[in-house]
Amino acid sequence: MLFLYYPILQCSYIYDQLLTSPQNFVQLFAAEFPFISFERQQLVQTLTAMSTAFLTAIAVILCILFRILNVNSQPLKPSVWCLDQQFLDCLYKIAPVLKEPYIPTRLWGFSGHVQTVLHSIVGRVKCPWPLGERVYLSLEDGSTLTYDLYQPLKEFEDDITVAICPGIGNSSESVYIRTFVHYAQCHGYRCAVLNHIGALNSVQVTASRIFTYGHTDDYSIMVENLTEKYRDTHIVAVGFSLGGNLVTKYMGESDKKKPQNIIGGISICQGYNAEEGTKWLLNWQNFRRFYLYIMTENMKNIILKHRHVLLSEETRQRHNLNEREIIAAATLPELDEAYTRRVHNFPTTTDLYRWSSSLHYFDKIEKPMIFINAKDDPLVPEDLLPPIKNFAASRHKTCYIELAHGGHLGFYEGGLIYPNPVTWLDRTLISMIGALFMIHINPSKHQISATH
Image 1: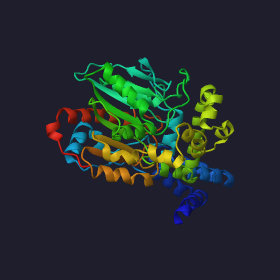
Image 2 (image 1 turned 135 degrees about the vertical axis):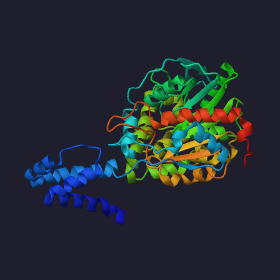
Image 3 (image 1 turned 90 degrees about the vertical axis):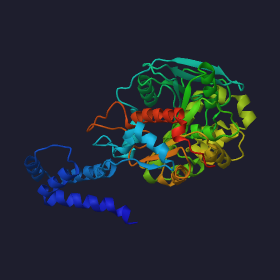
Image 4 (image 1 turned 30 degrees about the horizontal axis):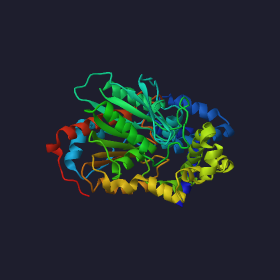
């Protein structure tokens, strides 16, 4: 339990130095925040003249900064798990950024919480709004599926389409998706972004369902439609968070016929195991319960926004839904018990989560795959990551990349306070897509029989 007392001891030390020796405190401050310039002697004189109460307030604020901003951390190179050395060599050649330290935005980028919160609230800085066309598809169950299609802004000798599956409740209008799409367009790639059913305010739900954590049919239909439009294109599947789970599960579903156009997939910040991941999110440790509350409210808002269809009298009777229980749900498991598992005919939420988890579909994946996670992701604890590490370390043409920092889909880099418009993740994904294509067109250099 010593780790519980470390922050207190650290704060006590700071407080003691601040009151008894302002000069020593200034030296400590300069050592911890070397990127902030100030006149030391003037600061010492100012602190000496301050009252004890005011100095106490400063000490508390600095303790919070030390704890939350994680200022003691340093930039580190990504850790890589990969059995296939030829596959890894190709990745390093096309994406040399993987051999370089990831340098987060200096003041706050070493905090997974700050990265995650900024990603959720701000998304990206100076975000473009790429122009594309919206494709509408009417499905057999009465649902209206849409995806947005963006053509490349730069000519490229090869036809490559990036099929993007966003995170929970996200769409082509999400800021981080728009930034990545524009960056990909500028590098000669066509992009298709799945709009999760129910996520867009401008598209009405026309059947009694929305997206879930494990149903890949919508993504599969988008990919099939893309191959009908562009028969000679090469498709790279890219999924963010929930979308990473869907893409991975889709790639490993043996009962789904997949187009030969697919040359590989990339998953970012997924948890791999919904059953265990949900248990972790129910804990207050590392503020996970707070994040779970936000996700639950977002999902409830989507359901209630389309309540005239999703909670119609006929739908409630058919699936035995209780609207009060849905509204009262305080966590995702409660919401899935009251709504999701009933609509999709699962006997329990445990069955729903087990069926949804990409972890159980690893062994059937036949195409090259790259997985990315951050150790400080507050939504995906480290305890969920050993299975993907073991899989990448035992499977050819598979790579797992782990960063010490980045939070959940953040990966901001550059600057002291204001980050670069393009994140480490945006830059790296573009290089990885190129690497997957090079491996595809030069199979003789990278051909190793897969182990199943």
